[in-house]
Length: 360
Ligand code: NAD
Ligand code: TYD
View 1 (cartoon, helix red, strand yellow):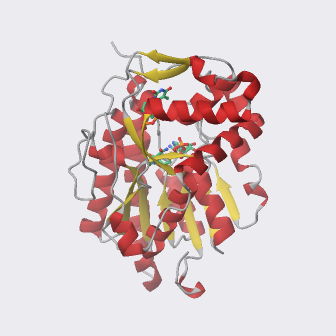
View 2 (view 1 turned 90 degrees about the vertical axis):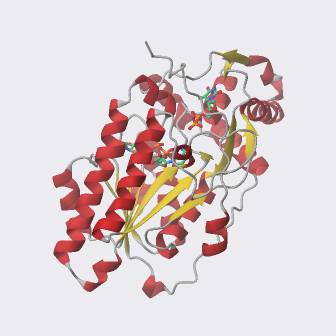
């Protein structure tokens, strides 16, 4: 992936949120494609399935520490003890609908948690003052949702104005601004990445693609918000993981990189495509599309996201390698073959129901 020599590559990478959907894809990527030791800091909230970590924990190169990123003392001790070369920060409350029902956890983890990490990392770099620590990098993993909502055309660029609409997006925007400020003010080598909607294996069932697959398999209504005309721009999580590593090791400090695969799709079209793939895989239950139901729209629902990824393509040579069609097919297969991963979640942490309607 990278033309760096082995001696130049980071030896220890601290990943926050590495038990979640994207974090675990990044940890798997690092453990298979690099020789780095991976320190995985994750509080194990409702969004972290212990089964995601099961096989990774057998690998000696990987260490999981269950801790809250808002715990400054614990985070300072971990940074001191593990001496990372790079921190890749993904831990967050990540679901828009939950942020509508209860924004407090989002403000705490996404804003206060990011601030805490920046402080701890900047202080460690300052106080240790070893020459090699000058290169200590901090990557803040963020979303295209900070840019707000688009009409039928145009794309988001790195220079686009921030215009977050949901509580989730607003807290991610705050974290991006804090990260940038720690670069300009304290000289920390920070990079911000803004990615489009991710899909793939190990995604928690509250998000559109796994929720649709699971509810269709269970013969439940497939809930499309509003008229299903909202557009999302999709990227496979493994393509995102590779782009994150590239941005971490080769990105320019102080810079922002958009990460997207230019795969736009209207929600209704996407749900229909998933149903058609399920029809191929489970013809006895076809047509799955008969379960599609239009439900009340999400409050403040962003109409369209579309990300222009030309900066990371031109400057860092990144290209996505998984087509949307192949990625959707392999994702459906994964959920069909891994019921033991998602079935317990429906009993323990999420009943599969509608979220984001709890407003006065
Ligand atoms: P996720 O909800 O699947 O995982 C988040 C992880 O963070 C979980 O393992 C959780 O236990 C952990 N966590 C939450 N609060 C914590 C805390 N206080 N301390 C320590 N750990 C904590 O989320 P995801 O979809 O994997 O997203 C990861 C990151 O990527 C987030 O920062 C998100 O904003 C960003 N992002 C997500 C998408 C997407 O489509 N999912 C797109 C762009 C950016
Ligand atoms: P989601 O996966 O929650 O991601 P985000 O809100 O971060 O884009 O939702 C993706 C799109 O799908 C969004 O426009 C809301 C819509 N949606 C539905 O129509 N039905 C659902 O059951 C869910 C969860 C989302």
